[in-house]
Structures are given as structure tokens and as C-alpha cells.
Length: 78
Image (cartoon, rainbow, N blue to C red; front, side, top):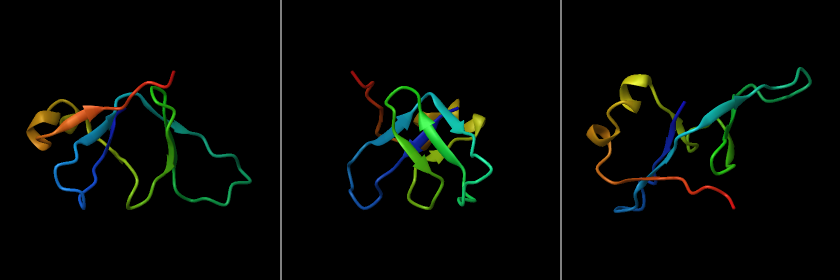
């Protein structure tokens, strides 16, 4: 699955696309009710919140250029 991170307050900043995202299963003792995700490509982790990267619907994934004019893909960790 893919996720996109958009910085709306920084005009001209490209939307960052995380192209290989997985949901991290929460353990039963976790106090978080939100889902947690990790990008397998760059290693970034986040908890689903209003300012976190947005998990994309399949229809949006297939037409990223129609939704975002300026995109870049996350960089792989070395």
C-alpha cells in the first residue's frame, strides 16, 4: 500500500510518496487505539493521526499525478 505526506503550510514543497507501506500489528498491551505504519523503503514509522502520512485508496494510487502536481518518492535508507 502507498501513503502520501503533504506539507500544506510549505507551498511548493513536493508531496512525499511512501510506496511500500505496511501496517504494524499492535500488541494486546498497547494503549494506542490508532493504527501504526512503517515504510519498508525508507524506514519511517508513524501513528495514524491528522498530520501523519495518509494511506491512499487504490483509485488514488493509480492516478497520483491527477491528485498531486508535485510529487517525489521517499529515499531508501542506506
